Amino acid sequence: DYQVDLLVHQLDRNGAIVKTYTFIDAYPTEIGAIGLDFDTANAIETFDVTFVYNYWTSNTATGGGAFGVNVSIDTPIGSFPISA
Image (tube, rainbow, N blue to C red; front, side, top):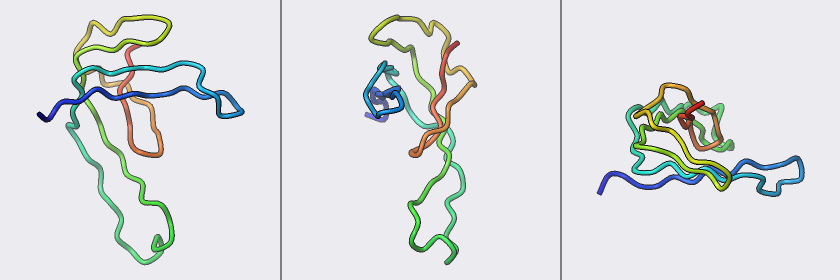
């Protein structure tokens, strides 16, 4: 129940989806500190999240034989590991 499939969409400059990655059986292993100071009262809350997954697929390729690679990309909703 704690594992889900994550979808990450790669966008072009106009916001159209160029490629989609699906991370199978992903779950968080680390959650970064969440700032609670008054300087961010009217800002969108951002913080880092590290996920581990079993494998990944994309709409153009499959791969990701390694488990829990420690390479990640940062997004507005957290960090996602990516297999090279």
